[in-house]
Image 1: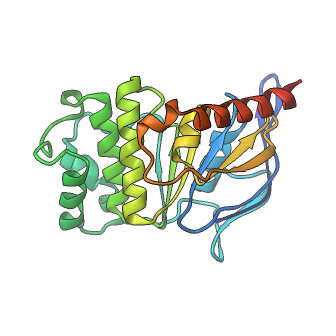
Image 2 (image 1 turned 180 degrees about the vertical axis):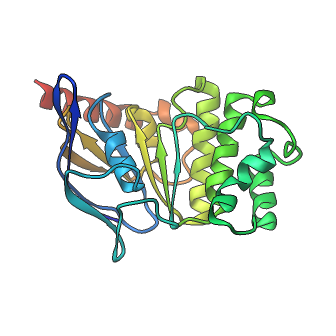
Length: 248
């Protein structure tokens, strides 16, 4: 995926908001890319534009030769909330993208994914019967069921408790290593970005610009315990200092 000079202005009652400013980025096929920045820096605007859900004021985004101006069949997105329909059970929530595309659900693939994320046997449960972590697992299955090449994730674990968040980070790392999908993951947590990413795109405060792109070379698979090592803590502090320096 290629982002070229992406800029975005929003018209509001109090005036124009400059959300993104000339962001250019080449996302490598099969990489795990984290986009890191403070609240309001435009990182979610950038991700939604990659999904074809927001139009740009200037610039363009392409997947291969396709210009992204609307949702694309090779791009799936996981939001901050699981967004499961409360009147549908888990099985029918997962089937929704197939219904929208007017295709038959890939039942074998869905069954394998449910088994993989620990939700086999919960197919007939409703969202109210599932914990927050289970709902996000279901949203991962729903997105992967259609077998996209690119998976966009907008702070999907931010509302979870620390233990469940660690569990979900381990899960998404394992799924990425198993599938080779391209994953673009939004977060405001430096530690989460370092744990997950091959590269971290550090964005400035609004208007969002790319301050730095940081390569992450910790070996995989990465255990949760890596976050307490001196090397990891030093990298967290380095990135924090980089951001604080640019703010000054």
